[in-house]
Structures are given as C-alpha cells and as structure tokens.
Image 1 (cartoon, rainbow, N blue to C red):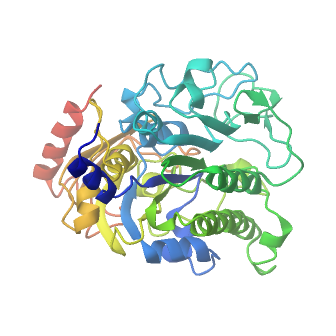
Image 2: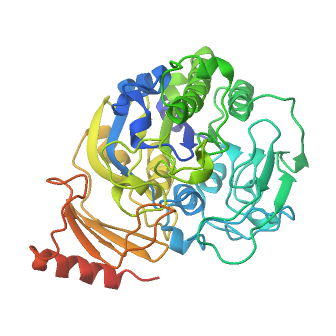
Length: 445
C-alpha cells in the first residue's frame, strides 16, 4: 500500500505523454512550406513546425523505405534488423521482415502501459511473426505491401525496374486489413481513410491511459492520385507532376490538421508528443511520372540526388517534433537519424532504454537546447557506403537515384561549405579521407 508521501508524489508527477510518430513516403525536403517550398500548401505542417522544433539536418537510415522504417521502430541500423533492402510484396503474405521478439518502440511503450496502434503502410514483413500485432502493436489498420492503389487498395506490378534481369513480376492482389481481417473499405482516398482511423483511435482513448500511434501514410508514393479538392488548390498552369505531388501532400496536411484538432478537443494536446519525418527523399522513378520520364514532381530542395542515393537527397529528410509547453519552439541544426526516434521517445516518456540500441537519446538536448552529442554516422545501400563525422561526409560508389548506375568514385564533401556535395575534396584533403575511410572499414556488421 502506498504511503501518504508516495501517494502525493505520484499525484504530483506529470503523466507520461502520449506519443504520435508520423511517417510519409517519398517526400522530399523541398515539399513543405516550412522547409522553403513556396509552391506547397501545408498550413498544418507549418504550424506544427512553428510550435515545435524543426530539424534541418535529420536523416533516414536508408534512402529506401523498408530499411528506413525498420530503424525508426527498432532504434537500430537497418543492417542489424535484418532489413537492409526493400522487402518484396507478395499475395501469399509470407514475407519475412522484423524478427520475432525484435526490440520495437511499440513493444517498449506497450510494456510501460501504453495502448499502441499502427495505421497505414507497414512494409516490414507480412509473415505472422513480422506483422504489427506481433511487434508490439495492439491494433493495426492498413497494408503490408510497399504501396497500394489509393482507391482500390490493390497492389500491382506490371513491369520491372530498368536494367533488371529476368521476366518482370506480374502480381496483382488486394492488401488492406483491420487487424487480421481483410477489409474492403468504401471508395475513398487512402490518405483520408488512414487519417480518419487515426482520429478515431485518439477519440477512443481515455485520460490517464497513455497511447502510442504510429501513423505511416503511403503518400506521396506512386501511383500518383489525389482528391480533386486537393488538386484544385494549385494552379492548372503548374507543372502537371508537381501539381499532383503537392496535392497528395496537401491531403496529408489535412489529416494532420484533423488529428491535432481531435487532440485539442480531447484535452490531450499539451500531453502529446508529435514527431514527423519522411522515410527517404523524393524519387525520380519513371513509374511516378505521367509520361514515363525521370520524375521531377518531388523536390529534395538544395540536396543532391534522389531516393536510392547516399548523396544527401536520398536520405536528408524533413522532420520535426512538438510537445506544447515542454519543448521550446526553435530550429535545430544538430544531426539526427531515424534510429534516434526510439530512444528519444522513450526518454521523453520516462521509459528505460532496452539494450542493443544504436540510436541516441536526444530527449535531454531537446528539453534543454544543449548541443547534440558528436558521433559518427553510417549508411549502406545497394553497393554504396557513406560515413558522416561532423561536417565531413565520405560517399563510396554513389548512384544518383534508383535509376542510375553506381559510380566507381570516392566522394569527400564538406557539408558546411558545400551542402550540395558539388566538389570532391578527396584529393585535396587526404588526411580527412584516410580518417573517414578507417571509420568506414571498421563499420561492418
């Protein structure tokens, strides 16, 4: 039985915050108004950034979706989760992904008494052991594949990637679920379906019962589809692909606005942490373009290259966090990664960190405004390798995107002086090159 002192202390202690993590798919740094996109219409994102902390140097752990998302949920480099590549999408729903018993943000918060829900794109395995409800989520509403049609909820692959060997896959199947039940929701754009379910989940929660919502939108990943009311917000004279891309993002913005309005209505806004990042940079894949050209609807802002590349455009992404009354609004220029989400959210929630985590707990620095810890960061994808230490970055065998071939080059850039990675300083700074090559050689799993 609690003593009087213990009871008073418990009553005085702040409640553990609710946690919402929002991900988008193939959204570039130059696709939000608060990140400098003058042609975007994102008032709710812009308000979230103004009321919270906007990160200018935040990175996905991979330039493609499955590995990037694995790092967000596990706090580990993707190579240590077993998901270093994009997972297949199969009608048999038996794709191995996250391993049974893997550390996950959902599981750690669930053990701490949180109600947990995953809404949207999963793409971390469709076999039973890899599904959301086996990885710490009480509820799941969404799809297992890399993407599905925004109205029919069907996955289809009717061709291969350029340069691929062998016959192209010919898969067409339906993929939309409410927990373990396959469902066929009424014809409505997928983004609105996911937003509505997120609002409904929050509406069901009770004061004193903390929750974790992982809201992973499929947009603005192809197929490029947007509701007419979103398309009409942009002038018909705009580039066709850019107009549709921004319309899909405006649709997400609407859902973020509705979700935050529900938090306000429930009186939960001041006790809810909201974090957002894109899973990788904007793509140039031809299947996103209306005429089959290299796609330019998405923008990576000032960064070089696209999705699939270890130049900055592939993995430096828009990101922000807000917790009203707890985190002072500002622009943060410290370097963060998707694998920092798990330890940082656990830190803000006052939950002990599990062993074996690669990410850093940034909660103390977020609260105090203190400088972020200095560390060396790594990436590896599709024969490319990269290492970042301070403002120096070394990229080996880079490729411009998923479309382009790897180049047999070692590229050294100073991101402070040359954020666009336009000048290769490997020959001019051999001592820096040797130091980073040593780090890169030592980083092997």
